[in-house]
Length: 493
RNA sequence: CGGGGCGUGGCGCAGCUCGGUAGCGCGCCUGCUUUGGGAGCAGGAGGUCGCCGGUUCGAAUCCGGCCGCCCCGACCA
Image (tube, rainbow, N blue to C red; front, side, top):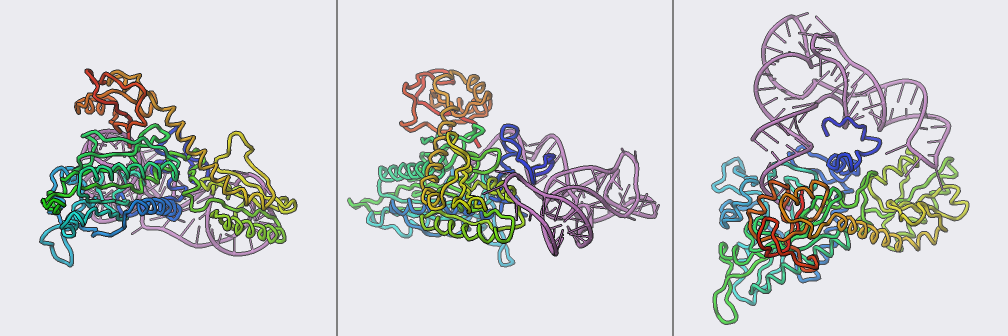
């Protein structure tokens, strides 16, 4: 914001190649996704950004429901003593807690923390609800805001307050909990691919990177256009860590008293930032059709009042017909803006498709369709008979969605290096040269991670799931010695 | 928390070195003419110059303190 010498307010954005970070900030604001607020590190999510988030919510919510989860809601404030109960958990979160010490004009006897995540309060309640194995599993999700007082914030990617969903489950057996954690990871992955057109890697987190309080963390890691990785979703196997601290016990079928097994998992408004950095281009945002609040913007173009009436009637008809075939269409009737100004505006906001209706088109009984990201093999503008353009629109939007996923996947693959790195220095060199995901062998020694962090500013993003592993398993660790496993390195957000 | 930068109409900036009562572009309002890739003309509205204090006849400008924001690093969904 400060010091912007470029005239970006009206004309072009800073190109991605020049300054990706500046480009990102400009896109988020100029596409009207979000704006800075008077509260440090907290953003205002504007209708266009919130509309995208709502689409994400709807899709995920449906997937959670289909797999037996229900929504519930727990308090924003958590007693300080709850958060402190699980040792690793409090160590992980203590530095970023916002604490409420006063209320009702008095100092509180026990401070509350504004939830940074809700494991503690939720499992304390589960403990009340569970007596028998018959009460399990509990499969709940909540849509909520949380607060983590981060040192450095960025719109969507890391804000002090953010919106997310957090799933919390309790199971009678370890195997069942493990299965749940893995199931959710799969849901996240297919959501990201099918809805966001963002293909993540999936796998396990290293000890150093796992969630504070978890036994194991699984994650989706997506590659952004600047070749940095974004942790886009996590699913944690919590074991009995929280159950023990919150006395979440049940009597088993055999009559024994046992602690329950928990999982927790979440995705946040960070996904919107991931969307921006996955598909955006130098003209602005690109929203995949399935998430676009408006999929088709209909633009009447006219000089005279007579023409305006004529094209307006056609625009109405087109928009209504699109609605009937399940396409979210809107008409931009503003008369004080020239067509060019509207083209740029809707392109900046990333609307997948626009339909132009001008006097020439009306005379021919046609409309002109233009995709935000045109098929490189086809013409940019496609004129078609009105009814045909409408009828074809759902298929064209599907095609755009498919193309975006494909493009993102080939960017990821083009930036992926396997089996070419045998030392931490080589890793640093490769990443410095613009590599994205780098696969190597790893001994499992955290000291190697630490060296890579310092030397290459890189971290292990995942120990990849089988599907993503290299054909030939690496035998040597980049830190020297034998590899115990294959890992994926990247610089990350 | 360390390093850097910046706070002046809604937005982006100039003015500050060398104190004299605030200007430009965009946007906004009104009117007319316009509209197939960021319209033109005319008229108009809008500013405690981040905050507090000091120096001075006089402070956006000089001095001191504070606050906020952005970027880079360490920490992180």
